[in-house]
Length: 327
Image (cartoon, rainbow, N blue to C red; front, side, top):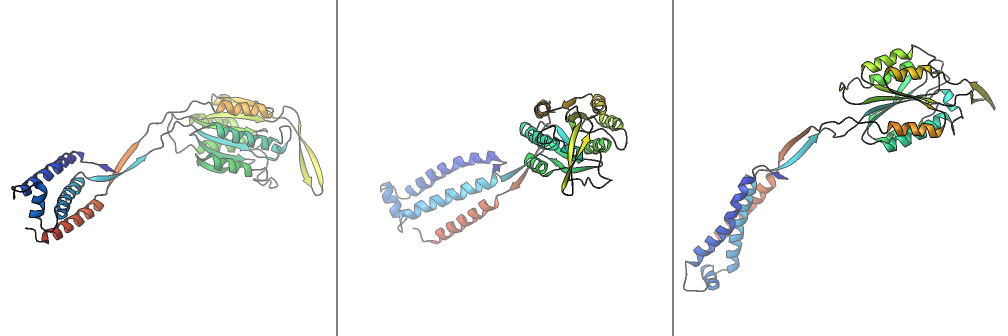
């Protein structure tokens, strides 16, 4: 509660003065007695009646002053005051991410390290995009890292139907394009905006991803590209009926990922083991954050009504008291 006209509280000084004058005026009506006897003489019903009358008058004055002081409940509305960066984590969940050169697999290692990364950052907004042939926004913009972690936990290469020919393979172009467009509502050039692209495969579908990187650069977006997996041939296991079929997959052609990072004047990482991948996210967690100014707006809601009700009750009691015959 806040009083908007605090200067009215100066009138509270009148309360002890009123008590003094009231008592003095009553005492002067019969000066040949001591004070206590005066009270009993003036108020034959009871000296307690006199005390209550003084209390009521002082209380009425007190609540009247409170109302004049304009009591209000302040409602503070402000933009989130945080030094944040906006991050789109773009994770490849194509079938090759099941390769086990990172333990327990590429996708599981990536998910675990991303969760650890979320433990290291603070006050940053995060999106989560997953892609194979086509990208999907798995999670919209959020400060709630627990939701991101839970979503990550439930992700697998089966999240996007790899058996559908229209959804398998790896389309880095579309993934970068979707991640970039997530920032389109924010025209703040000073705020740090980054895309963290994690993939283990070449850009083997759709348009040259370098065009997407240039598009991101024009939006003042930085791209971290992270190659997940070993530099050697890997294997993934397919369940074919009761049998397990081992499929050989080639190492990543890192040329595109290096060029994507260079175009946006940022960094390419080679995550060949779990420890290296974790170190990458530790570096990213140290990014310089953009300082955001606080926009604060305070509105006030008057709350004088309870005081007015109490004042009305006190006035009513005082009127009743005045109807008593006092001689």
